[in-house]
Length: 143
Ligand code: RB5
Image (cartoon, rainbow, N blue to C red; front, side, top):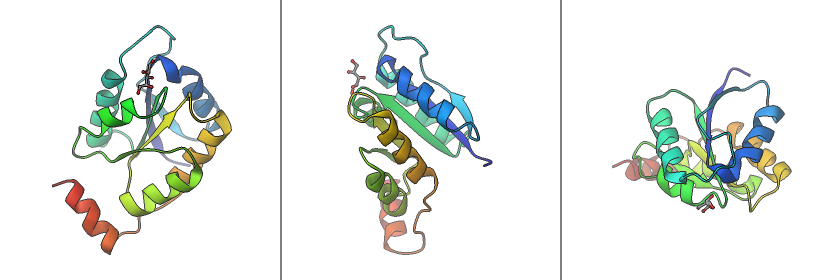
């Protein structure tokens, strides 16, 4: 697979990040997160990841913090980003189809490694349903 994915995390997401990177060796990963469990501030990583996605440095992003919520809020401050916090593969699939989400947010304290892996797999393998009502709505999100 020829896909570049940027991944960022705070201290709560180090283990899950490493698990995802090891689980998908075919992906070209850009690691923008912290690699230690020393306390950090999730907005710093969310902003950094959002910028990478907005600049086109990677096709998709993965954002991980304890809940997947704080870092997702930070990511979504960027107008070019549509970051979705997902807790199962159905959400991850539908947020690609409906919202053309470009960042998957995961809560390391909420979902287990295998559920996170399923979310990621669904996310990267699902196309946005372009050309109709979803496209009209997504366009409004960027205005
Ligand atoms: C860090 O303790 C925690 O607040 C953070 O990872 C995240 O869950 C915030 O939304």
